Image (cartoon, rainbow, N blue to C red; front, side, top):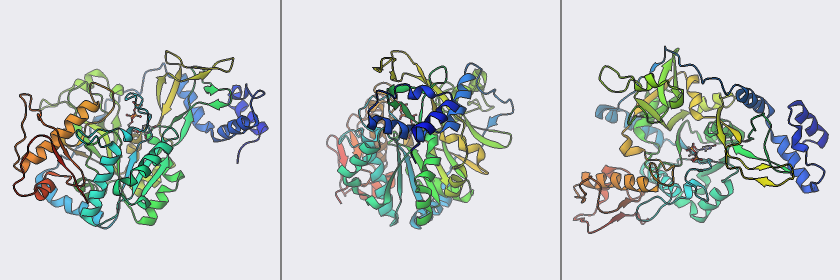
Length: 467
Ligand code: UTP
């Protein structure tokens, strides 16, 4: 229930945030109601944690524990593929697998006006990230004659636009009853003195609580209950920005099941010591991911006996969770991560100012902070050229250009494996564009099976499923 003015004032006073009512008098009735509603949603326990963290922000980050060791990593062999893939396929056929996509971020580096998933990335058709992900799921549903519920996390920033996009595109062929949107939590940002920032006289500026907000959001919105009703036990988790991701990969699912893991983590070898991936490590018997910025330089650069980096494997936020583990973690207070950002604020005269310099501290929860709570966490390595090329920036690394290149390269390799020669330049890059609709084929084997007899190329190659 929405707080009354008096109750709101009392709660704010108790938390040193009474400035939020500073513009009350000139507000319209409607604005007052909206502001009281916002105050009602403020989670003062979390805000207290934010203020404590802010006060300590000049201290060094967490000390690096010298007992920290690289976590064991399974590097799957052909024998593993033969043994564990059927186990994963069995789970898929039995309808025990669901998919969680986190798409609540603001995509500020890309600078695209809309949800990042609505960004066109495919080299020929400009198919969007949402289309590519959805059609991979559709392919799996057809292949295993099953249903794979698709849980998509949005935030207030992009929820309506995301739902509209799926409706406009008829859910890309998926059954809308199995596509569930849920919104993550939002919370305020603080100024350097720990005061909540308003962006208008009657409005608190709110920001998404990070992809770590997924777990509580799944519970709050009834998605964990939906999974239980459907008999879904295994959840494949991924981020919206990676069109190469192998969604619900049966080998990964099989390994997770065989090891009875609470969480499994796909990891890849870092390109070099300076690459900013969080590394997988163990300390005190627990598995964890340590952020790049929390690793001392000498540890980042340390070499193992085989000459490779000692802390070689990094996480790209592709996971499998057991539903029971997610249920357990829904009540966990994950640590907060802090970032200094530019945020619009309400000046003394009531106008909104867009600062040139960072003025605010934003807090986020990260999904990988649940890992130390897992009784069993399994790290599985993969080939990044096959499965990882994220869209982060408008240009340069991890941009539309590199994503389209990597999609073309992956699909070119599939065609080459099927005996089709693809022209390449001296740098090894295809001189034509290649695009394969995930419903036409989603692996080299499937391409080989579906290509018509006598298939030959003559310019760009687009293979599309017309069903
Ligand atoms: P990033 O941290 O790369 O953020 O998110 P972003 O929003 O895509 O881009 P920038 O940093 O603003 O440029 C990685 C993944 O986590 C999701 C994003 O949607 C993306 O899939 N995410 C991030 C959320 O779902 N919620 C959040 O609060 C933050």
